[in-house]
Length: 331
Ligand code: F6P
Image (cartoon, rainbow, N blue to C red; front, top):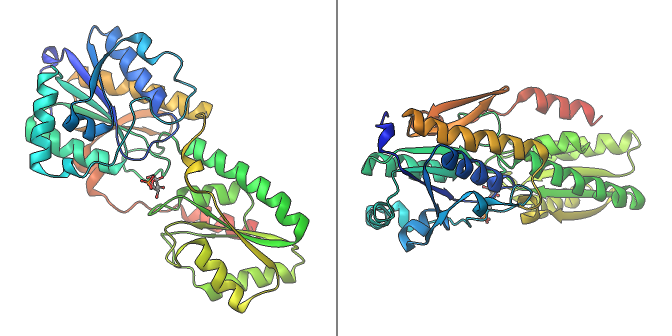
């Protein structure tokens, strides 16, 4: 969608859905780029919910001082059900219009993208999305903001668990985030040297897992770590541990669910730079007349993909090479 660039005087910025480390760096970059280009900026609290509740405020360069190193999002976030209804979006639009906002920068995951696509079409308002989620599960980009930091957090946890697992000769099941995406589990599993990784995208039968663990025991492994993505079809780490123990009780077994600590913390250097590049690109694309698209990174290049295209390809392919590598590294 192309719009008249000279009509953009004020850009609204918001974060929506699950927070991710680096969102603040993206906000900062979008705000400062817009101001540098002579535009006004409105911050919208709590994403789409804030549009409905009319919780917005003027931002300047100092509004985003000292946030680049902070996890979470200074603009707060929410998963907003009301915005899924035409009535909710109508109220949101009234508030956006009243605030003088001519274009939007939306930072979040697929729910955020879906809302942005509908809203932009319904009310003819230019919007540019930035992929912010620890899950790395969006089309149109190789990497999402927060994924690198979350991986580092998980690896740090796995390393610590390995110390105690090895000391006690235990088998640990570590549950990581990823309802539909095994990216964190696979990546952190490889980097953390896991013996097995259970992913939402793959059906691993419990007997198959037990065979792998038994082989490990036969080859003199004295402790083991299994990474379980929360969306694994076997029903999470507690279930997997219980079912394994019923048939294979060679090891003392423990479960550790990492939970929301994976979402927090200071963003890594890679996430800060990625977020900064994306925030800058989002505003520039809007000011070039581009809209209803997402910023992404392919290799080292910043790219844009129409939201319609990014949202239509639902299935993201797991990197089969990584799956194979993880298996070989566990022998
Ligand atoms: O989408 C990011 C994510 O952290 C998922 O990995 C996880 O399943 C979900 O959000 C948890 O959402 P909530 O914080 O709303 O419980």
